[in-house]
Amino acid sequence: MDKNFRRTVIAGNWKMNMTPTAAAAFIKELAPMVADADCDVVLCVPAIDIPAAVAAAEGTNIHIGAENVHFAESGAYTGEISADMLVDAGVEYVIIGHSERRQYFAETDETVNARTKAALAKNLKAIVCVGETLTQREQGITAETVSLQTKIALLGVSAEDMKNVIIAYEPVWAIGTGKTATSDQADEVCGIIRDVIAGLYGECVAKATTIQYGGSMNAKNAEELLSKVNVDGGLIGGASLKTADFTVIVKNG
Ligand code: PGA
Image (tube, rainbow, N blue to C red; front, side, top):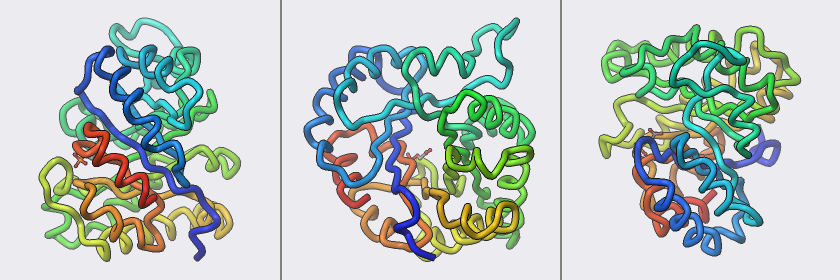
């Protein structure tokens, strides 16, 4: 399978970091540093930072994403944000099913599927996160776990809509821990996910789907991870909060 069939996407996930003021200053500093990137550059930011981030990124090659989206169109869901609201604010990407959402906010494979369909219905690019826990890896059920998560997340998603789906393979044990999957482990599981997509949609869609690795990717290990044939980019937490480190990762994308 040839990497040239798909876009490399380097996406930051700021999580609950950066005020709107800090977000604008960060993007102004980053923009000239990544202006010549060969890959798609995305920053997924806290909802309240979105207007400032979109304004700061205007006229640059930096795309703004959100960190979550609700599955309903509108209604009585206090505190939630709909796909229409994100689109209207200038958001292009949205992270769905991050393991922190699954762990701390009762996100399930079913709600991940509902959110994915809500995002795709409004033409947002969905970065759908899957990944095994340390226990699941030790039990030897990594392939089964990520396959099931991927299949449920994509229930009811058409082959046509897959052009707006990015899968992020994020082993839970590697997130924010400084423990990175080896490049071979990342490549193997991203390959398993690609096989699942081939089974659901055929080889053409599988070849064209961007599958990222995430989990302690940083300026030092990015080159090795991104050199792997099945790793088409990264979802980056900690290292996306420093312009210099994020730039090094983008340059390797
Ligand atoms: P990390 O986070 O790079 O800090 O491990 C990645 C993520 O949670 O997306």
